[in-house]
Image 1 (cartoon, rainbow, N blue to C red):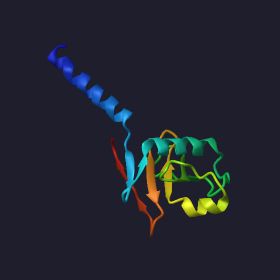
Image 2: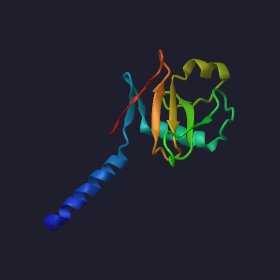
Image 3: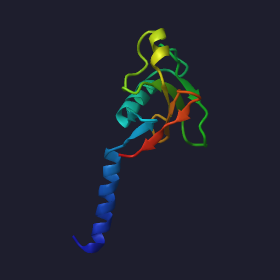
Length: 124
């Protein structure tokens, strides 16, 4: 490989490495893996907006900028389990919410603890 060909190859390798390891969200020491968030996003977008699937319902949110696409807000647990279960058990254990587009090009995780806060996304 010639030296001028090396730089694009390194750039592609780094890009693939970043895509392969999407990281996690740190919510004051509680880690929520990207795989868990992705699974929750897939599940939420398989349900109808405004549907009531246990607690709470999934609903559409206004995108923060034009052209972003549909946003949905829905709960997730730190263990990656979704909000399946009885109404009352869900009320007790849901401590995190996701606001995301279907392809996760826009994705934020929020904790409900205290007054609530946005979790920090850390790339892997």
